[in-house]
Length: 173
Length: 173
Image 1: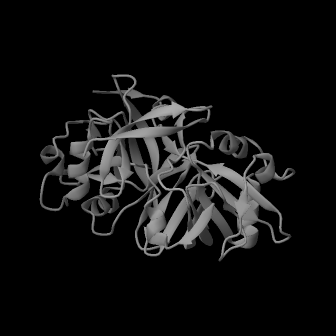
Image 2: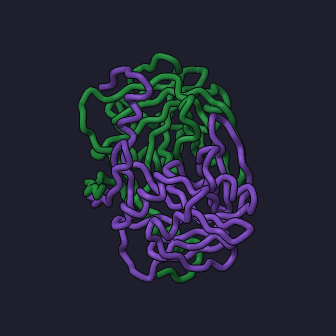
Image 3: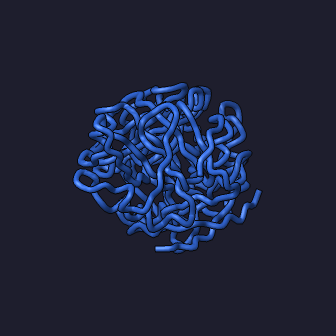
């Protein structure tokens, strides 16, 4: 049975949420990474992602500049690296190396792949809208890469305050 | 280490994905429900959801007609009901009762709440865009309701082919 509650309290029951690492690279060659929880698909042919980020993110500046980014899904053992990426600003520091993340080159965009992620999607910017208080970025997937190790579990955000962890499924159907 | 792969193969490594139940009610009073996997937040002040659904969904017709809907997160024991909602069309059948879902009235919109869900968010339509091959619907949360039972786990989509189940977290940080 449901009881009405305030929206903020209700949001405490939204977990687990996905978490992705989004990489970019400035025209001058400087790479960056951020953690994004607001991400889902926006189209399946072509495949597109939609992600919500904050106005102040260096990633937002670089996506507007280069119209490219990479979406990587970290594996369950990458909580520390993802937490670092999600809690530091990239304007003045080189977050990728400080987060302990290793990168590889993609094939279609200059933003780097996250070498240890479960999967990486190279994306080209389609559009930016602003229905509420932050930019919604839509990107078309133009190339994909997967970890050579099979059966890696994705990292999820399991509770308020960046409680990052793996999950074990107990599928029912 | 990453190896390039085709996009379709890479998508097999996107799981677990969220799953939500989205309810609507026609102007004539007929309720409907669908399962939506493409859903995330689009704003935090005010709180907004963005969801991607298919053009043929009766839900899409009803959202355009009434500009209202409810987003409910089913709990881990609701795999059967959610699978029914996700694999049947609502144009000709009364999916809510056939899925075995009990409803309650909300306070701001006429679309019904899912009584057994973890949490329900009443939403008013903000905008519909189409960056790819399906409508992206943005709704502003205008009221929220939570289950009187605490600690219910959310149902997730754990693998291709609607493998719905609960997950147990093993948080690392």
